[in-house]
Length: 209
Image 1 (tube, rainbow, N blue to C red):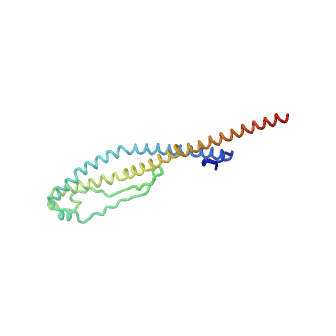
Image 2: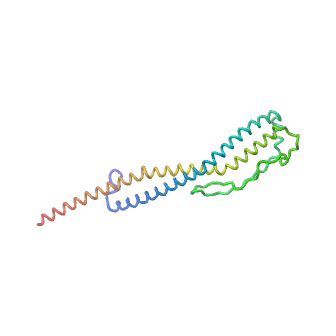
């Protein structure tokens, strides 16, 4: 290493820098292609995600007021009793890879929305407000589960895109310019040495004559 932190101006270091710059350029190109693929995948998921979020927001705006009405009609204790016993809702999941990004994917889940009969509540035992709130929150939960895979994937892809962009910026704005500057400096020094050697050789040749 020479003064200023640069490699010593030798042919060996020149070749090593050329090889390293080639690898950096190749890695940068690969990362750019990965970034483009991630952006394309995010755009592909964006439209259905926006639509699903709008449906979830609309359902939530309906579900929570209906819950408040049910609470005012039934009372908290009575409404809690209507919800017993609890349901066993198990989802089937698996790990997956999308563009090298690890995600957990819901493969299947039991149906959330039920008929009043399937809820096991005899007709006339609860108010219409409680029945409406129950149906609204079952729909709400169904929408959330259906959107979970896409939302999880969007989050992971967004993180991967940000990480890849940082890597590309580091290579393009820091590593490549530094290596290129070192390469130019070594070439300049070697060229100067070569010219000096050539001048000395000419002088020696003239002196011998």
